[in-house]
Length: 141
Image 1 (cartoon, one colour):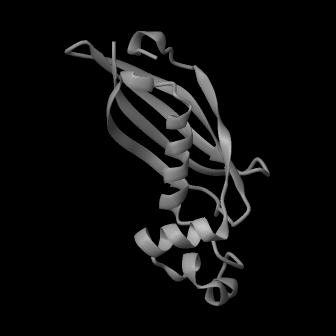
Image 2 (spheres, rainbow, N blue to C red; image 1 turned 60 degrees about the horizontal axis):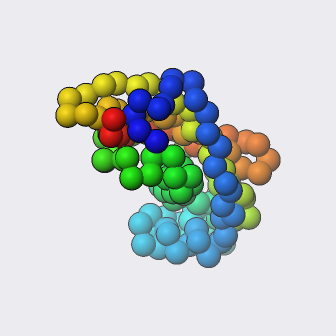
Image 3 (cartoon, rainbow, N blue to C red; image 1 turned 180 degrees about the horizontal axis):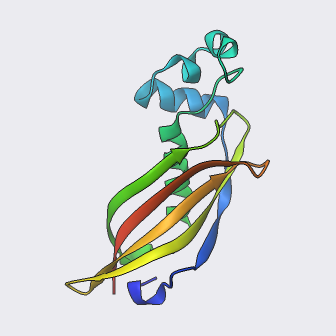
């Protein structure tokens, strides 16, 4: 969609993604090697009662789900920022995640483009919100 086709208040829902223990451990091993993501025994003794996904992994999945919707298509020029990120609840192996994107801001810029900001809210299959973040992108007009 082009910048002019977006309206504040529009809402889009993504497909879902099932988080596996292997996915969690693979991501954490490369990008966030902390015990709560990698060491099952130690994680069981912690406050989450087992392995949980890295918040960065949850963010990455959320962005992937949003982009795979194809709403921006080839009209996206670049991401411009992320703000107000909140990791609300842990994500466990077996959780199925989906994201709701709501257009919350629209600003015209020079050079035939504009910035669209969406509020990404990611939920698990129990309808618990696990992540929230404002994501902005430069879009062609």
